[in-house]
Image (cartoon, rainbow, N blue to C red; front, top):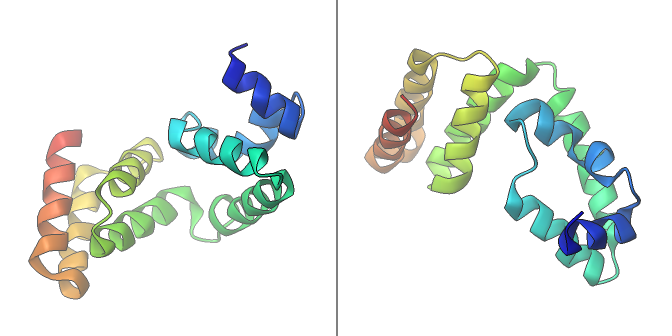
Length: 133
């Protein structure tokens, strides 16, 4: 176990990855490094219970969402395109594919993002889709 993982275990208990990372594993196949870093930073600031609460809410709002994981990831991809958030949009596009979405679904989302976010959102979507093909 790395020093970083030992810090997380000290803050959240030995089962931290299974307990906190279940939604990430289901959607992305892993807990992204930036999420682990956020958890560690908040724990180091003395507020590990905040991370526990946020991850419980994420599980309800995302994993237990009536839309299902495939549609939920497509929606998040579109929202992030409109916000111009390239890194998170890339993660959610890949997650949508992992959950059974097609490249055509992603393009449909990028087309829809054009309505709200214009050419920048559409162009970002097309670029990310092209990377994932």
